Image 1 (spheres, rainbow, N blue to C red):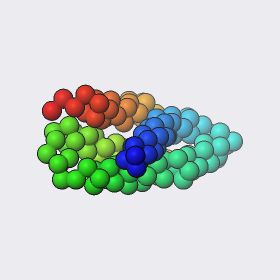
Image 2 (tube, rainbow, N blue to C red; image 1 turned 90 degrees about the vertical axis):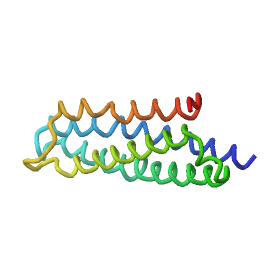
Image 3 (tube, helix red, strand yellow; image 1 turned 45 degrees about the vertical axis):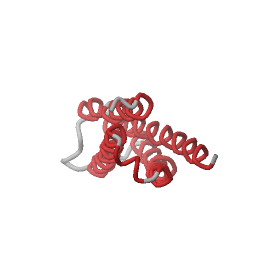
Length: 142
């Protein structure tokens, strides 16, 4: 019963984290395309800051804590499953993309700012990784 509650909240916060990761690059594009210091730029700065503080970072931490809790609850047997390794690899990849997006956001306003086209292209990477994570857990192909 406890495991089911942990799993439910793991899924809920994974959805929140993914929603934030899909929103963040789009907000950064809007900011990049706005006039520096203008109303849109300042609004996007505020939206990005709130997104990171309220949704992205807390959700990522909770997903990791609950995921590791579930793995611990299953015992060492979980380490022998290939699907678990794939799931773990995809979550590490999603976490890396989280860091990449945060790093790119910090560069906005400098000459090293990302290009909007780059953000639009890599915006899909967390979604693709999430597809592999879900397939790994639900289908358990190996």
